Image (tube, rainbow, N blue to C red; front, side, top):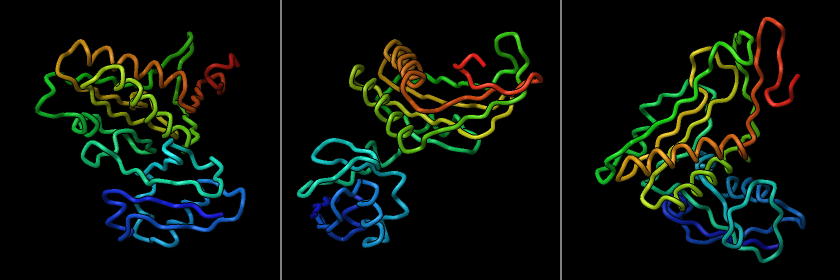
Length: 219
């Protein structure tokens, strides 16, 4: 089957073309197309984690199926090229997240920092382990941020979520929201963390003297 791929902004410059056509076996997925794109246009490979793919004008994950004649677009980050939603296995720098949303027209910057505490449900906590489904988690982080921005016009939201093993006192998630006025920023920040906890596939395991348990399963 033939898939037409469109390139924009930095992806157009790297690929040196506006459009390209790929032939893939029937039943191929977006992930397979990505592999083919990176193979043909090696300069795009380092940008892969920063880009999103849209199939027939709708964002799609790596597992999404393709059909003959689909049009796929490589979508670079907006907002000046800054990737506003990220995952990391390294310590988070809150100032770096705040810097992503600072702008002259924003009179308020509100941040939320989720920190590993030393207790939970009456037990001491030694450390936490966060497991993540990377591709889906990143897509959902972006979806959450975009949905909140759509409800609060003029807001800008940046999120970074940590995964792996975290010690007490380390930041698990940092959210920064900027807007013209503080009320809008506070509300948007609250909505963002609430929705992240509802829909983003990141799981938390607590380690204590009594053993380890996954949060949310009561064991």
